[in-house]
Image (cartoon, rainbow, N blue to C red; front, side, top):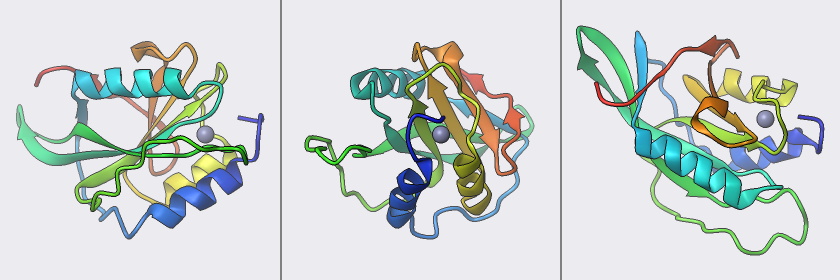
Length: 155
Ligand SMILES: [Zn+2]
């Protein structure tokens, strides 16, 4: 996105990230529907600002595939503007974090250059959601910034 400087955005996000992501292989990704609903609701609530959260989950054996199952979110507050005040911050120990999600307050869910650098450094799995913040405006990317298919729903 071009609306503001995502480098500073990610700098701040990275300050929250311990060594989160071990490199583990998986063949498929499945996201629980509630997680997508929460992402869309958070994004709508943050608009016209960005929101960012961390995706939690585990690798499970599902239908003979090693599947990364995303079943939760850690929400950290973020606001690009200086008058930022009210964001919910749950300072939980971030265990089980497998990736990131952030919103683009615009109509493109493609990763920016800053997004790609972050993806490359922080492993596995990333979501970007753009307006109108519905399930179909959520896109998933791998470490290389390539779009990947994910299943939403029950195994
Ligand atoms: Zn972005």
